[in-house]
Length: 621
Ligand SMILES: Cc1cc2nc3c(=O)[nH]c(=O)nc-3n(C[C@H](O)[C@H](O)[C@H](O)COP(=O)(O)OP(=O)(O)OC[C@H]3O[C@@H](n4cnc5c(N)ncnc54)[C@H](O)[C@@H]3O)c2cc1C
Image (cartoon, rainbow, N blue to C red; front, side, top):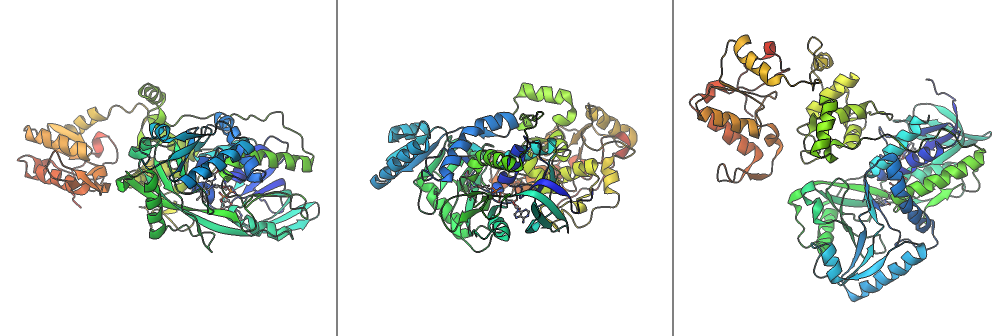
């Protein structure tokens, strides 16, 4: 649809947690809404890179907007998660004191908690702290315990809110930047990077670290944002159980300090730092800051072990240069222009409350009426990774794709990827798919599952890998995909390549294939040349069987090829090897086996059908 000069009641600039939650709350009213986001997905700013803590509210100075909306937001989270289905756990938080003067800070925080209306906050002694968190340093003197603190998945908070807005008729444009806003007759003219000029009665400024620039286009009451970067270390899910609660140290002038916290997905997160910088977009981490995170986190957790490190990242806070508070509502000289600006921490926590307040203000300004058909509850499925065996069996019975695990690190299924691709909010990049489903987010960073995911994307959307951006424009997955790639993955002669419904006939077909179609005869066909397949082929060969080992990739080894850390082979080879070294040893053993050499083959095997089995040359890397 041509949007030139199109009129909306409300334009929301920015689809971070502020923009998405306000769009959800605006959906309660009879109002037309357009959300404009310059990135190729929602949450391209601070919402994607923060500590993910739903703060209890003992930290902000009493009487500030931060204090009010923090506590209100924290109270709303349980209802929002029940309605929208995003991951949220009320795990409670601790603030540790390591010296007598820090105990005094805890007392001051407790008194703030009382003034801010935070429930259940109390000081606890060393033994209770260590009972709650056995990994905490024995140097601790006391702690502040806040049971209403929580953790969430900020991207999912924003996504589920935006989805609900779209289901209620809101529109979303990605890859479109608001370049200019002018006061017009009864509203605003909004010019964007797509060359569009929209008219809107109301503009909601939710542009994160750029919200000062949008405000300053329409108001003489200037805002200044200072970007403050925070660096993090993220540990694998083996480490998430080391801590149950979020553990802070006493806050400093520069922020809440370095924390150690489990995430809702079972990882362990350490950070952030707080570094003022000129750039609003540079999220590069530095060695110095990551070392600082490590050093400070090891004060809380002396047993800190970075063997499980899987990622480091940084987020940029939109700090108010002229006072430590959010800038909310109409500036006074710009009626109909609503700020959610300088929205730094605790913005994630405050978002539901700020969104509800902003939507009420906007609807009052427009004289809008409530919709009678607003449904606050979104249908949502629990992720496959969270299901127990019985639930998984039920999911698989529903459809084979519900049990076809594509991303093994994060246990994401083909059906979950397909659901995301056909969801209410468009997926324009591989990273958007990653953040929706968590596929490619684990230890192997997608090294193993990305080709499979690219195939599913091609099959479902018709986009071949050279049209698929990783993140942002000109970040294609591959330079050039093979001719006819999409047709190939959509199926040779119409047969789908991945997970057919009820596709349990594969082993029988392998048997047929080996004998009937190629003229070659084997006792055993092993499908899959990863660690299990190599070991099975070796055992069968050692037992005297004639074996064919088939793998779809051009080199054997499966995920071992990506496991560049050591720790393999201690039992089998009595040596500590990396994954690739371990795989090479297995391959060499097979090559040396009397019958093995003939039998070993590797190559692309497009479909489990008799006529397509080919004997391919052995490939090594
Ligand atoms: C290191 C760090 C740790 C934090 N930890 C916590 C925490 O634990 N708990 C908590 O409550 N809060 C925390 N916060 C704060 C929280 O992350 C933010 O308050 C919140 O994410 C801000 O959301 P937002 O939507 O305002 O901004 P953003 O998430 O930055 O979203 C703004 C969006 O606007 C888009 N945009 C910008 N300009 C334009 C334009 N001209 N046109 C169109 N689109 C535009 C951007 O691309 C972006 O997607 C933390 C922040 C940081 C950086």
